[in-house]
Length: 552
Ligand SMILES: [Zn+2]
Ligand SMILES: [Zn+2]
Image (cartoon, rainbow, N blue to C red; front, top):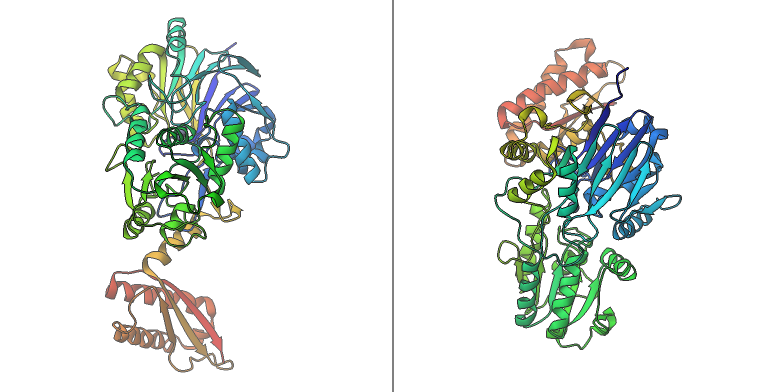
């Protein structure tokens, strides 16, 4: 009898940055690792968020024994509020991660009935035939973990997001001794973070940011306004420490930042000296060099306090000359343009703006090449699978693995939906399941398909032309010349002649088509064909063409 195989199926996060989600399946048991979201790319017009397609899991939902979350970043927990009701499985995570999940589920009104469990590092939980244990890793959020998964086929190590910071700001450094111990015992498969596999060397320690913030607080003539991700609790701690050292009080601005800070205080992840945190109404009359504000808005989110301040649209707070604004975050790909606009308006209003291109006010949380190699060397897996990254990151990570001696045939570069089947001695991609993007647009989840997106792109790029065709009710003959109205296509004054010519073109075509001219589907196709060709020849644009028929 052949033994069952273990299936490893990425549903998101491979060949893209974001919406990380991994499925492990053995016989009748499934575990899911991370349920993240992705921020839309620029061409996904009007889309707020992207989440993984989980149709594969929904069919097998009775088999899901648990959802294990590595840490509280949006690309690992962000889709839970949309997908948890369909998965309906218990969630396991570290304590702060649980707090962040709670905040997000509550926001999405999905907290009712959620089963949230704390999984302390080093303690093993049993999920069907899987046994899962977490170990602490360093990342840009406290309580991040990697996972050690004991399966009937062998041991798997999932790195989560990690770097090797030997002097982290909060939390423990990555537990290298536990990994070395596992390596000695034998690891079947390592799944490891590839986000920064392009960068040689080592990622700098969080301490670097602490020192920079210290200098900024000391030298700034007025208020210091720091923006970062609300989940970057260790960064908030660094800001509070630097502010306290220079006798500045700290004010938290914005709902999501306030919610996170309150939760982190309650759970003991933030350490704030007495009298440092202030209420907004205490700001009035305080000397500016005694003030530090912490706010979200580092990604240019239009409703965030920072962006509203930058646009002179905030009720209580305005940027004044002498303010120092610190952007302590890197842009998530796709957000660069809006962030740059925010930077420009802040400068225009007289603020000094500091961001990572001009000063080390942010270090990222992912390991560079030497750290990735160290992990590979410690864990010494038989098989290796790069995760979390665009295809080039995965590919470069695979090359790194080869350079430390893992044979090429034991390295699997997968994409979302690929099914990797593993036995103790061999691994093979055996198929592909449905996977991909589900678009969240306002309140609707998954109703936006690729056709809608294609239309939005077309409208945004080349505009729209509406053709109004009047025909006689009785005879079906054209009445007068068709009217043409366009938006976003060409300057209608400059292209007046071309538009006139296209009206004649439509009239001639319909005149020549005899009694068929009243048949709507005929007119519709004919007019679109003709104008498409004509406008493309004249302008090299392909506006969306919408013919309308009016019977008079
Ligand atoms: Zn992360
Ligand atoms: Zn991540």
